[in-house]
Image (cartoon, rainbow, N blue to C red; front, side, top):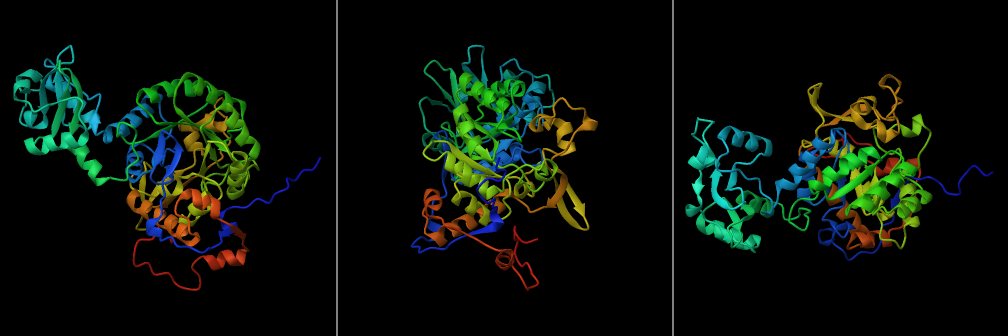
Length: 487
């Protein structure tokens, strides 16, 4: 039997994209992408579902810029659902299901709710959900008696400014500006509370016009789940908190367990499902047959992944994307390239090879919003970054991702490491650089959108000498401005 497949494995450093005639200015290109009719992104970036990369803070920062974050699963299902809830609550426009208190609620309970949800005011409703008043931070600022009941200090209904449904955000904004209020309750003709608009959310919409939002104007967010029982525990909770994207997240997606999990989710819930990770033509067809809406490509390309040297398994990332793209040609299934992205040019190459978006771990781990610990070494700042196949991460909860959930801790076989990456500041600054590079690449080949980037691109294989020539060389680099790609 022939042991070698009939194609050569290539990764990003092995190729360049040929420049072509262009009439396209980088400032005029469109970098929007769609993973599904319900998942429309203004930039083709996802943050990895890793416990040193994505929790609610990162997911919020990325969604505000137009991408989507995937909350990791190295926490309890309840904790993970709460992280999703934080993202969905961050920017709501008209909040259809606001947090409320009752007239008899005591202030000590109010203070607890305020702290847990990072809010400073509530509609006050009776047992029939009829609006009877509003309680804001202004009402309680100088109150010391925590046993005081809400009705004694709230602003009663008779003194409230409110609006009737239906109402849009622009109409609500006009009422709030005219009345100089920060919260506007929305009621029906029977005085039942139907929503709440806060001026803080209106400002967020103004400040983040490029944000990726759902049909109710809330930020998009995804979450990772394991297979079988793990998925059955997590998926209902995540969807109850209106998670937009369920990612069946394993190291090897071409397996019976992953297939059965995707089938179970699609049978029991109406949601968008990502299956992964895969790296071959056959695996793409398998996940397609199982009902995946999106596939995630990448086995071993991550900077902290050791699968290829521990297990001897993998496919160089560019070839993996090309093979999966070929398998799914003509279908509606979209591709996420996960791993191996070091430069903005790698994003251009990944999309040119057939990806619809890329998932980043290492680069986002370097930012302020990543949950990894900030440390100081030799007077410089770094953030801890660890693979989900590392011993540390598996002990915390990611054993099942590497099919070692029944293995004792002292007998785990790691497929990842723990390391540190330079601290680079805010995620939005990194995103600006990455998308700027993507737009520049599109300009070089005359692609006005990502579909044209995939259609028009032509690759040339390069030598190690050409790779050396591609990077800065024969100079001492003196950084006069922040640069995310030159250490």
